[in-house]
Amino acid sequence: MWYNQDMQPQRIVIVGAGFVGLPTARTLAARLRHTHAVTLIDEKDVFQFSPRLIDLLARPDATHVVAPLKQIAARDGFTYVQGHTLSVDRARKIVFVQEPQEETLTPVPYDALVLASGSETNFFGVPGTDTFAFPLKSVAHVEQIHARANELIAAAIQTPESAEALLTVAVVGGGPSGLEALFAIKGYLERALAKSAPALIHAPRLHLVQAAPQILPGFPPNLVNGTMDELAHQGITAHLGDAAAKLGDGFLLTSKGTRINSHLVIWCAGILPRRIEAIPPYAVDKSGCLSVDQSLRIEPGVFAAGDCALYRERNVVIPKNAQTAMMMSATIANNIVREAQNLPLKPFRYVSRGNLLSYGTTGYLDMKFFQWKTRIAPWVRDLFYRVRFTQITGL
Ligand SMILES: Cc1cc2nc3c(=O)[nH]c(=O)nc-3n(C[C@H](O)[C@H](O)[C@H](O)COP(=O)(O)OP(=O)(O)OC[C@H]3O[C@@H](n4cnc5c(N)ncnc54)[C@H](O)[C@@H]3O)c2cc1C
Image (cartoon, rainbow, N blue to C red):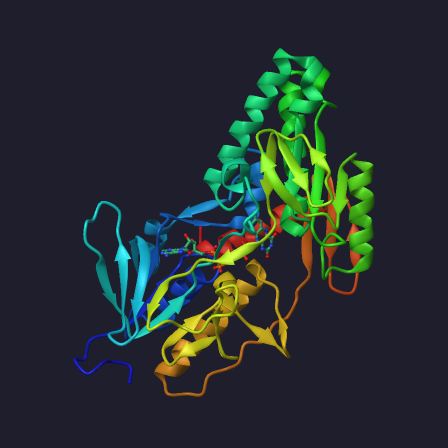
C-alpha cells in the first residue's frame, strides 16, 4: 500500500506553499521520508507569512515576512516546483503547471493531492476598484501602497495648504486585517512625516469604510466597543453600514452618498478562493470554495484546506485565517498518512485559540473568554508571530 504497483514511491503533490501547504509538505517529508516523494508547487519562490504584511505596512524594515522555498525544500527533503498550477486532470491524476520561462505545461502526476491555493482580494465588482483600489495580499502590494503614500507625502510637502486633502486615506473593510492595516498605514505616514515634514505630522485623515453595521463581526462585544473607542481616540472616522460603492481618481463614494476625497484607498474588504480548474470540476460553493468532508477530503487521495476550501462545523462556516489553516494542515498530513495505511480518517475539529490585534501603539489580547486592551499587545503579537514563522519555516 505504501508503494504503487511499479514499486515507486507514492507521489504526494501539494499546490500552494502557504499556511496549509508548507507545513503539510514539511511534515509529510519527515514522516514518510522512506516511502513517499513530496512535491510542493507554488508560483512564488517564497513562503509569505501574510499577517506580517501588516508589520511591513507599518515599517518597511519588518522581518519574518517571507522565507525562500528552495532552501527549505532542499533542507527538509521535498521537491519544490516554482510555477502556476493551471489544472487538475482527475482521471489521469495529473496536475499541469506553467513554470516560468517554459513554453509547454509541465505534467506532475500524483497519488495524493492537496489543494491549498489560498485566496485573492474580492472587490465585489465595485466600479473603479481595478484602477484605484490598493489590495493588501502580497509584499508587492505593500510596496505599491508605500510608493503611493510617499508620492502623496512629497506632494503635501510641496503644497502644505493641501496636506490634509492629499493625506486622506481610506481603508475598506472593518475585519481584523482592515483594522490592523488602518493603524499600520497611520503609523507609516506619521513616522515618514516625522522625518521629512514634522509640521505636517497631524495632517493625515483616516477613514474606515465598513459595509456591515459593526466592525469585527463575530468578535466579542467588549473588543468591538473598545476598538471603536480606539478609532475615535486616534481621530479615525468610521463609516459603518456604508459600503464602498464607487472609486475614482481621488475619491471614494459610499452607498449612503458620502464622498471621501482619498488618493489612497486600501482594500481589505473580502476574499475569493484562488481557483484551479479541474476536469471534471470539483464541487464548489457559490463563492467557488472547494467543498470538503469532515476529514477535509474532496475524494479519495485528494484534500483541500485553508482559504480555498469551505468547511462547516455543525453547519457553521469556520473562520478563514492562518490559525485555521495551520490546524487544517495537521489534519491533512495525518489523514494522508492514515489513508496510506488503510486506516480510517480523522475528522477536523476547529478550536479557536483567540486573537492578537495590533492597533499601532496599543492592541488587544483576545483569549476567548477574556479580552485585554494593552500597550504590550503589539509586542506580544510580534513575538508570537516570530515564533510561528520559525515553527512554519524552520528558519
Ligand atoms: C494582510 C493580511 C493580514 C492577515 N492577518 C492575519 C492574522 O493576523 N491572523 C490570521 O490568523 N490570519 C491572518 N490573515 C489571513 C491568513 O494569512 C490566511 O487565512 C492564510 O494565509 C490562509 O492560508 P492558505 O494556506 O489557505 O493560503 P496562503 O497562505 O495564501 O497560501 C496560498 C499559496 O498558494 C499559492 N498559489 C495560489 N494559487 C496558485 C496556483 N494556481 N499555482 C501555484 N501556487 C498557487 C500562493 O502563491 C500562496 O503561496 C491575514 C491575511 C492578510 C492578507
